[in-house]
Length: 379
Image 1 (cartoon, helix red, strand yellow):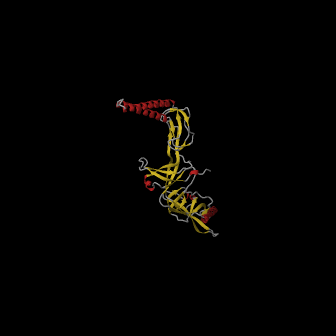
Image 2 (cartoon, rainbow, N blue to C red):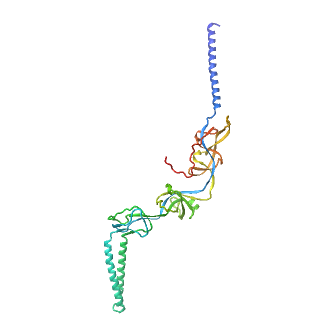
Image 3 (cartoon, rainbow, N blue to C red):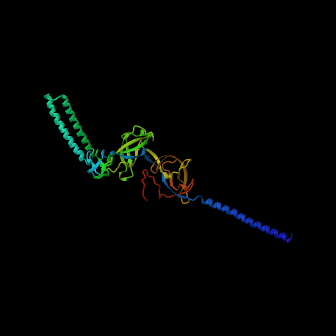
């Protein structure tokens, strides 16, 4: 073997040794990295939890309705004329029959006086001719003419009095007046709104129910009425009427509840929520709606379950997914029929970052709302 060949062999052997060392180091590093990550496991995730418990729920029917006055009208006149007197102020409480407004009526009053004088003359003539008829001084035909003249005169007087009464606006019922829309000296056409009059205690709440639910309510049944104004929230009422027909357009039935309104803070036209208790109360396991993950293939929750002890003797908590069957909702709450049991620890926040067997760290300093009657809060 010459020198050149020997050098070539030595160089190839050196290259082989170097490549073997590089390859071996890469394999060794991969094995060690795999062992390292295997020893680390899935990092724990922080979540909040709550204990599933049962609550008593009363089945209810809820509907949106409007308040309506027991008696209400926009007052106006049948005849035209100029306003002579306004005898009320905006917001007054008035009794039935109270005079509210008068139009100028000097001409009509003068005509009434003339007609009354004619009626008095006709009455005197009829009385005098009656005595003459008894004395056979005049014919029966003449007496009948006098009687007819008297009746026509009295009818003309009544007609003119009716015209004068149309120049006066009286309260048709007891109630509260609204804002005055007219002033003295103003010319009014027939039908011009003068003021609104509303009887506010009691007051009606009208609402619609689907035809399929009407058989669950009856006259005399108690209702709860809620509105945005907290000062008058939670009013109790009674079903007072149910429409005997179904609206063909909406397939709903009009229902009316009667409410007491002694403070008269409830006003006609206010939107309300009417709730009617039906049937017997039920006990359900309830959760905040945010605790549930809704999926096309089924709704799920994550349970926080104990899985042995760690090196320090502390319990290890892991996530376990469970399919559930949900029921009705009430505010922020939802009833769960199947999939969990009372006492289970359910993850209520942080579900998006965990999966089955994920180690958990529980932090319950912040909890989602679970209010059956939530209200908007300004922040």
